[in-house]
Length: 147
Image (cartoon, rainbow, N blue to C red; front, side):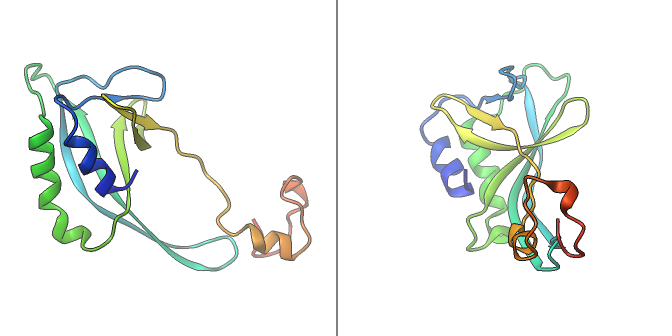
């Protein structure tokens, strides 16, 4: 879900609710402790330079059990990062503490935001395919620059 889709979804709800991938609810007294543009500048396994952008929001639950973040308040928070995000419309990524800090994608399922699992992947599969290596046989991938 992109940041523009996330903001649009906020207009249709009365309460902000996040559901984790295992189906449990993020406690309703959560705070947004960080919101901003995250930029990852890296070289992939094929040696290609890449940049990825996302809007990252960190959810944190404290002991102030009466705290509730309204959709309107969250819209105000997100409007403050508009100058940082600029014209981009990146995907939203949620950070949430479980046994470690987890990073999740997010989808809107009507009344709530569903945190979705993220997975690693080879960003340059063509490097291996060019070398004639089948990605279904990772042990065969010994070519420099190949995943």
